[in-house]
Length: 219
Ligand code: SF4
Image (cartoon, protein in one colour):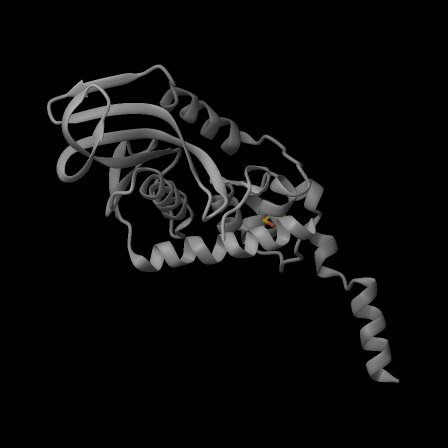
């Protein structure tokens, strides 16, 4: 199956979806957004990482910033913060450069490495797009964290790739129905930039449908 461009989802949405399916739908289906300190800091870091005009060669590595990527198979598009090309026999040819170059995506994040895999999923999806665009394998990428100022290598495993595909399948289903799922409020709600719009307290209450279903069962 190949998606049309108008149905493409944002790659960055994968991290929202991993954090909370409802948050992703509020942002990407209902187009709600609210800045908080975390999102503003994150945007500033990305602004510094993205510079569409920047290309640099150092030894065996060529660095490009803000490279647009997409996949018709996955139905997504986005941009790589930093995309390195490293001389490698499995790589691809690049205009104006001799030799074969293997892409190596690097995603910039504020804070430090997290317990969940939202950042890894976003990076893996970028790599899957590049593999489809350039027809070459990308076995690894890196996450750079602003707080620790360190790169963390991420092996792009089959398990990570499967999660990307499964999440995107579910996201496309919600997007095509224009549906915002209800979820159980959790401690993640405290750090959520949309908690006022989402009103998690209301999610704890029974919906009218739940009430009617329970009433029917009791009769
Ligand atoms: S407030 Fe909680 S339930 Fe609502 S979108 Fe945010 S994380 Fe999800």
